Length: 538
Image (cartoon, rainbow, N blue to C red; front, top):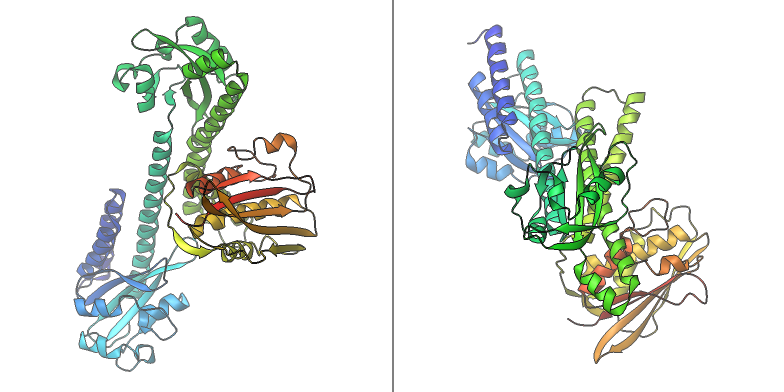
């Protein structure tokens, strides 16, 4: 039998082995399996087991085991935690350590005693695995084949192992989350048709997107490491952009600037550029980001048709895209990483109820705000895959209204339906159309003073021989200002104090994906009205 000192040294070596594997980016399965191996090698008379709480169902799933019979693992996989569900199910349910010294007689094992005894298990000590936010995310358990009480050293070992498992689970899950966000951002940036060029502070090119290669004719390896002056048709414009845009000593702006550019072939073309400063987590400037759009075709159209309005529309669209890239590249990425790291570290160190814990809670709320921005960006910029089924429109808008119950707390708000005998059964994606109604209702609640009345009216409509349902949503608020009506479906347009300005742009995308429409209605009789049409069948 190992001495206390030998056990301590063995435990430290095992913990180091697990931490090293975690630092090397091993999968969660491998890390947890290593943790079980370390536990059983240190204490050969015991059998280790890790169960994880399924994030969706709340049931227990096998995380890692080495000596437990496969049939036993299959039998307990998917068990729901409860007050008398063995050692592990009870530990998850109560959030406290559960010690069972004799499985054959303990009432906690009444429903699974036969399974355990058949597997040769006589005692089980289970420690809940608790996340940094205080949620139970699994259990670390040690079984023995003899009925006995654990020693203090063994309990301390189980507790330490559970803490190590919590660190591993949270670290790996966080890394997965970061990788998903990185992939999403990469997809969004890659989908932007305009040239994206990133440079150092001395304006040496460090990133040259595929769209930039297509626009200028250079491959990335031909320009990386060279000055952006290579791309300007006129050296004076290169110098002017330093004075007006790519200079950390001046204030930042997302105004659009028109420049003459030069392709690799030597041919010049007119293009617009939006530029911003790239900053690190400390807010220090580390480079510049520029987005360039070829406006040759637009220039030709303006010359032929004298439609100066086209230039304004394109410039506003470019500015909107620039804001998106700026938000993704700086605010979302850096803030989410900084907030998550802070939360991970400080939750282990700050006591509940302290002033510093209040600061940490504010950090968590900021992270939630940024995650909301990510969700809006996914809906706005990501591909739309519809799940079409036959559904009832009234059921969907009522669900959207019900989901806003919290927002309507302490508000005098009423939803009025004028349906008559209209058949509201159509083929559409319930989730997408519910979000359209939710966005409309949220806007009305934000714009209207109590009492709020939102009226939904429906009628049949024939559009080029295709049967549609026409739905009008009108509130009793102040209506839309004229300058807002023109741009209400454009990105980043909002009259709310807090909001991304993507809600109506998303609604328009969803309706168009259904081959329907959404437009601003008539406000002559007061309030704001939006009218949507939806084909009855696909």
